Image (cartoon, rainbow, N blue to C red; front, side, top):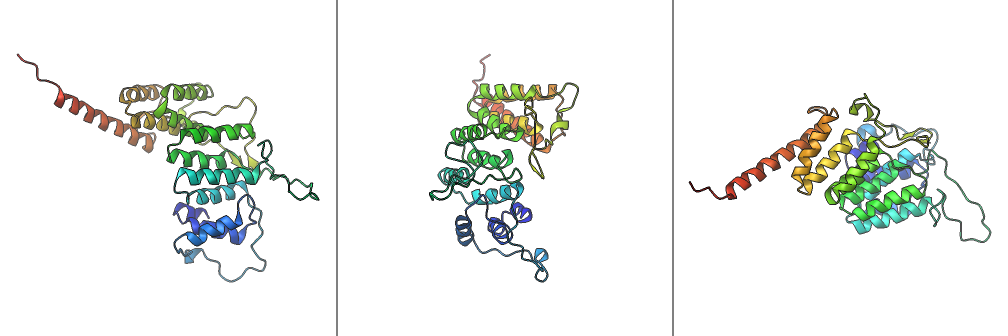
Length: 290
């Protein structure tokens, strides 16, 4: 599934899910509709099974990791933020009660049924799964929806991690740099003195048994990706002066050129726009009369 996801062959991802897993946490009918609507795709012959297995493969219980791949492929079919909002509402309805207090499907409407099934931790939604919708709404530049997802996570007991806050801070950098600065300030409280920033780049979010268990004192810490997102937001909002100061800030905490290719690329964009702005200023400035 990961192989086809990385190649944007989302219909094949969904077909594998239907063929090999119980359809838990997603609509089987909706997935089948997406498969039928997608252009014809074929599986890689090197990855197909040789012969039939002794036991059928259908009916495996999907983990959060599998469902994250599935929902990532489902949201890829959303052509606009309205369609994505519809999918997000469906996502919440599969997992939570109407009041959003427990990761359990809503009670059956049949009067004879009082059974309430609770998904095991290895399947329940976590910050990685919600991150799909954070990045999706970011693509459509919908800050209000991003904040709603963050709120929904919090009230449902899913603690936002570094990746989640990175999306929020990057969007605020474009619209409200002051709030982006406050978010970064709170995240930087978790950095330990004397440790380089790149040591925190790989923060575990989930394990084979479900979401990562963290203490009540845990706080998300910034990574180079966090600083890159904020810097990109400042550049895209044409706050070049603030962007220059931000580069000086991250260099002061130990982030040097060559540590991360993405950051180097964004910094280069900043210098290009700065040179362009300087050239335009010189070209339009009146020549002093001697």
